[in-house]
Amino acid sequence: MENIKREILGMNKNFKNLIVAIAIFACAFAGFITGQAFAAYSPDDLYTDVWKLINKKYVDQTNNQQDWSRWRYKYEGKLLTNEDAYVAIDTMLASLNDPYTKFLDPKEFAEETASIKGSLKGIGVQISVKDGKLMVIAPIEGSPAEKAGIVADDEILEIDGESAKGMSIDKAADKIRGEKGTTVILNIKRGDTVKKYSVMRDEIEIKAVSTKLPEGNTTVIPDELQYIRISSFISKHVAEDISKILMTSKKKKGYIIDLRSNPGGLLTNAIFISRMLLQNSIIVSTVDRDGYKQTERAGYTTLTNAPIVVLINKGSASASEILSGALKDNGRATIIGDQSFGKGLVQEINRLPEGSGVNITIQRYLTPNGTDIHKKGITPDILVKLTEDDIKNKNDVQLKKAVEVLSQKCNLKCSSK
Image (cartoon, rainbow, N blue to C red; front, side, top):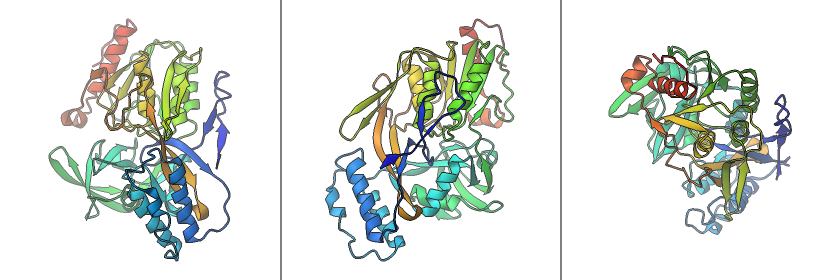
């Protein structure tokens, strides 16, 4: 299948010729999208196509220690409708025990396509399955979920009274999504506390890059420092937006890059931004099913050499971990906050007939030091946790620590109160 690519426009001359693979974002992944035009296929053809794609591309050649050929003709002649094929495909993919390799029916694929355009309908929460539990990766900034008080690392026990135990990401997302003005009730476990949240769905605008502090945050940022918040890497404009900020803030003495509750997005965005900040350094390596290792490197020019502090937390995943890992391993930035989510896999999304698609884990990635962070995460240089009281009182001790550390690096006399 042929990769669909588009040139990033509006970046400085050092980045103008970089090519970005367009991807669809859901449940926090870094990846690619492939596809081609299709004629009408039968349900059997649809099922067979997915089987072949997994057989050819899936990162684990053992396919979760099973004989993949057993699925090849398992439902032959039994799939009368596309819906039959969807169920059979879901069953087949479930045997891989990989929550990131999943089938998307036409409705789900269309919704994911809409996400890259910058708007969604729902409550604005990114979810994933971790250790068999349905977990919140992060709420989208300014979303109904964030306003209701849902935070990263919350466990979802029930959705509208239905137990989330054993529920797939797709089913959970489908139950949480809905039309603007309708309400979903989530039973949330945080630590030892269980609480019900009634959240009204709305049109969610995805704001990927901002230089403004989160609403209600009273931390004082010295004028000599530049604060940059990246809430996701989903938009194809993220790298361009960061480039513009760096170009217009050259007089700043240091940068705070806030990746907290950033669930990820395009792998290429993380690579492009790393190239803006690193010089002649390894950014990330990817390893495919055949053990082929491909390494991405930064060039000999950067947009800034000023000191950097990066903020991460439990909701920082995927592309966020690529960027923070690259800056940490190369000694380019001080990482402050909490242990990140731990998603070290790369997905490719393949278009299928009649509007459906399939996400396939095709690679795992390693930080510049060769570290596999999957299910482990990035460990901060300075561990700072936010307590319940901190959140309630809007006391951002992580950001205050970032200001303190960066001010020392920049020889500034300032207060982080």
